[in-house]
Length: 335
Image (tube, rainbow, N blue to C red):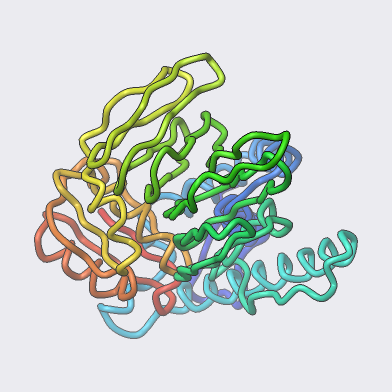
């Protein structure tokens, strides 16, 4: 049966309510295998479920009223209520999980879903940042790192070990000089990602972990990149490279561009809009959806990460796209 959304109804039907809940869960920053399986089972269980999901993923104007066109319709108001209820359910689930993990003293953002403050998998990270947060950290050896928004690292420091494990996001490292300990030799400062490791032969560099590879950009001196597959390469100052299962390849990204986030800026040089939006997501509470056609457009310019409304407005002025804002900015679609 088709999932209906009548403007005369007082509540969303069950299928649409569930679809909103799945949207919130799947875009919360991390999803367990069990949740993915649960979603697939729910999707297959009833044709109405799939239709409700497709309506939610399709042009959302059918369900929400864009704020820029006037007052929201009843359907937009109902959807907002459903999003709030879904958010509340996940906050309760998060609280229970936090207690089970013995993290009762940890401060929690007031809106986990809307702010997507710290994905579940990063709660136990040694150091982390939330949405829109950049932060400097001093390390035990005198090195410092700066984490970009929604980033997380673990530390492995001890005799003969100076390793930062990047779990998510981007960091800028300022490595202290290599130390020597009696009988143990020197401990090189190393950043490790799922795609390999970067050993500092110098001082300042940026590492960003992405889905299929990691990017390293050298600001001062050099680093040595190695991958689990055995590839190895020294990267000199002023250069960038990607490393992962396919090996190590040079990248055209300028190190100054790769580190612009530290100044609160996003520099785009012939960059797909999809990548630009991905950077903005870490600085904006809520959800940004980009149509495939729009995601492929190339962007030139400098944008403020700390004012994503202004950045989105600038993109709308310079590109053939429509930026629609719903639910007081919680949801944005770019078409």
